[in-house]
Image (cartoon, rainbow over all chains, first blue to last red; front, top):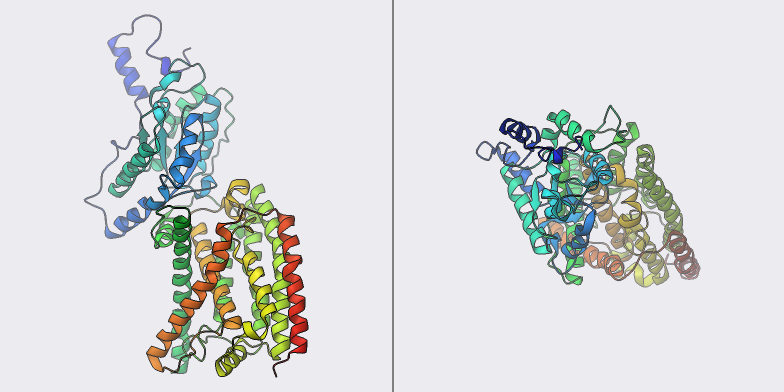
Length: 217
Length: 317
């Protein structure tokens, strides 16, 4: 019970204000897009061009968890045609830019997702689908799914909905493109800087922790 | 003066091959999209992809050959490119062509794939190993009809020089496709395997092999491989146009206008030839490895043998 950070506030008895404040500080997500410095004014011309290329060439690795994976084929194929925005599928994490978390994550799946995320190369972005990744959604009281994804991985864009339709998914991609052009997206460096905090959160929910100590990403 | 033109021409050839190859890749994506009733990416999408890939950071290493393999591919592509005459009698695009370059090109065209195989082998990914095995197996398949058809041409014309073949087609106005249609058919069918589009995309099958040999290569490595592949696609197209479809630069215009007209002719012919594997790929599912090899060893090889017999009984010189 005490191991799960999501249930920290719901401990037996009424928490004091001090405890609530401390919990808010402890579990506040670190690498949100809002927290990043917007250096649009200071962007050099090279950075501007590279950001333009990055936002129009997103190689997507769809990690098909939960029900959201079924929206990906509809988004990619003829009806909604995400390729007109330069979005195309990547086969392996090494080639990918965007990691799509399409729905709820059980703690077992989270372990694999972390491994996949750490194999991706900078700059890398994460898009989270559906309410399950935001606050647990319909699994809010489940014992083996995580509730808020950005305590474990830096998330760039959340797409609300249960499940989001392809229109919303494409809207999410457009939002991600705006963030990339403004220099706000990409949490890889922040993830490495705050690795202790992320590792602590991850180890709280992943019981059989057998990650390599020296991680070569 | 001649040397300066040669050096400048080599750079021009490299830039031309890269640009045209990448542009054709973008056109292929656009045409694929239109066939599937989609809008599709812009035609310059491949350039954006390349720019992004080159701007990505790389925090991993897969050993020495992992670093060398992409360079190997692009070096092999550029080496073959330098031995292919782009235009007939074009001083600017002759580069290093010599008598007997046809045999040299036959050997050098395999070189890039071998570099890829060694690099993918060192990455240690099982998908890469399977992809390399499939690629080498399929190479054994399509090389046989291709070599048979080129040998038929060599027998028929008593030459191993691309320049001589182009000169013959320029003088007589007859394309070699008319002198030996069987050789052209065999080479055309083997070119389907060379381009590795469906139904022969068994090497880099994304759904079953996670893109095969390149599965551990991302960022700059993937970008370099992509540019090497684009140059290589251009090489294959120009080679087929030079041998069978009359080459380019057959107009009587002189100077800049001659070069421009020649390039226009080249682009038209290569584009039309490129559409054959593209459209066959659009309507085909994927072969299994043994189906692909069986295909190449059956009709294309038979056509190649018929081409040799035809060449023996219809010598040109």
